[in-house]
Image (cartoon, rainbow, N blue to C red; front, side):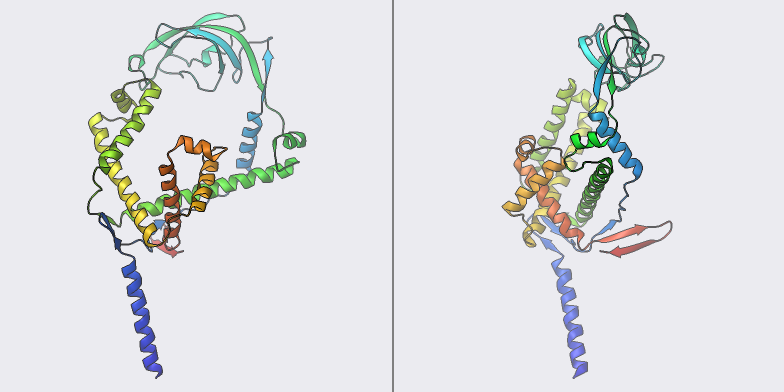
Length: 358
């Protein structure tokens, strides 16, 4: 009797295993996913927050609340903020009353035999008018200025210096919602940095698992017109960037991406197909495993995305990106988290590879 029972249990276990394997293969009219459970990804180790990290962040926070103090008794030094008039002989090469922080690398840096724009202002005093020469870099966005040497006439109107406050209990009380003392504030900053690292780690793992998923996805066909639609969307995205730089699209591609329009079109089509493939795969798993977010989950997702992207309010986020795009991001995150629960993280060693199933 016991023997028959053990055989029955063994058979049942085998059946369950077979069912599990078969359930890991799903398909629809467009794709077949051969495997989505037990995907393998490389282990990503979380890095710890150090005291130096905390110090650096606190210094950045202090600098953000810095005030300015007018300087009248000396020449310009590195770190000063100078108000200048400048002019040259090319379009958009002149301005008046411009505030420039020396050392910020806002303007053209050292190139060829010429020193940087900001470097050449150091040592001059209020009221001085002088000329400087700078050489534009070879990859400058305006093709006509690439490698060009230009003379600028500079007049210094005023000098001020940044006054960074010291870290005190008083500063903490005035600038933190949660802390009253320096000791409490250091803990607050550390906690925020750890949260950022956790968020970065989670984002990395989600990306890795989706890459692993796509290796197990076979495309039967793409939805009619969807590839062209995606290519147009990608192209429009980069054309807007070209407009922001004030250069023609083909010049933008060559200077910023290092490719011709033909090469770009090829890459855009490849990216479009990959995007569609991922979107369909994610949606298929979401439908099969009941992972489509509820309205409440979407609302929570919007709040988290807004926070992650630095938006104070959700409506600001929704103005910056289409609702469809935001919903797609939230859906992909939920599906990625589901896939991560059954994944195998591979530990890479010098000569051998061991695995650890989570």
